[in-house]
Image 1 (cartoon, rainbow, N blue to C red):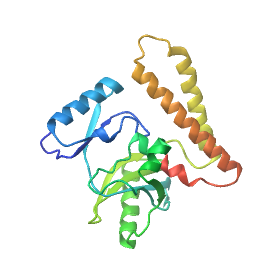
Image 2 (tube, rainbow, N blue to C red; image 1 turned 180 degrees about the vertical axis):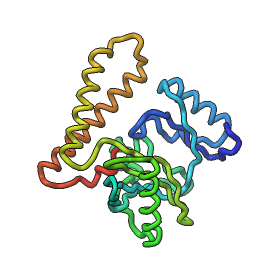
Image 3 (cartoon, rainbow, N blue to C red; image 1 turned 45 degrees about the vertical axis):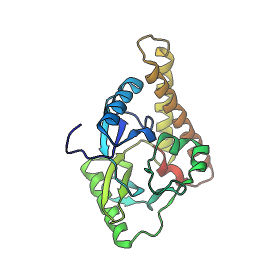
Length: 231
């Protein structure tokens, strides 16, 4: 572990998405836990691991639309209502996709409340700068942590091809179809690790949920709020 990386630390698979591979056990506080979780990621996800300092604070999401002229959508938040104050609040795989788990811990995705107007302006401008620095086009969701002192920490950018219109939805569907075709050709290959096969199945399942939900709302002429909460 690099000494400049301070505990507590989150360990994640480097090349997964939708929080796949992130659990409460990803939160480590000792070198022994650090080594064990990194080895777990290597073994179970056939993936490199990324380690980042855990930032205690609010989990906020800012969606940015546009190319030359950027528009920031209203800020969203993942709220941990029933998680004890001394427990880490992490957007794990279960926190996103397991409804029973979400109900048990009072996890809700909602529009952020009680944000200082100055903080909102800083968040918006910061996310627009990140968007431009990363040369993102079209759409991205920027994930952030904000401390009780209103310090802003950039976690990651999600420049996914999952926009809020028919064209983007069809693009996702086409790419999912390509994945299905590729999977049909290689799924029985002994060279494909079981963990990677499971990851592909999960990705396709989540993509399918997005496509169905987005098409339902497009048929009603609406844009779904939860679009900014899905990776």
